[in-house]
Length: 190
Image (cartoon, rainbow, N blue to C red):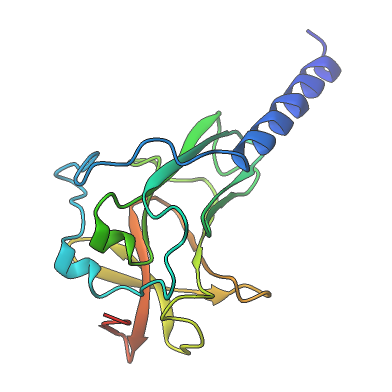
């Protein structure tokens, strides 16, 4: 196979992935605790209560989306959450996922589990969360947090159109958004 033909095939595959990534549906709801492992336990309902809330629930508050993204990079979007994979972050085609909580209380909060787990990226991947329409909107102390037996602040930047709060990460876990005043996580809209 010539290098030119291989590049054409890769470009076609990338186009298919990018087209299907934006069109994914919610799939089946994720059951509470599904996919949790002893190395990465899920946040409890009490811990989730510390996260920002939606002022108005999105149409789909439970479910998941997935996309196959390869070394060329790509993007996955699902009800205001996003994963932006830069070129070179992964060395092979990899399934990326965004899972939202299956329980009603979790669905009220800005929280998602991103996959794949147990994988370090060669380049940081950007993750985005709904910002506009949440209790975090216009909060100068807004931050993205990840669950590691407690919420760990990661910082965050509001997108140019103020629709999302974004941060970079070298790995995936359960993430949310909240207010961080003086480095202390405070309940955000709870």
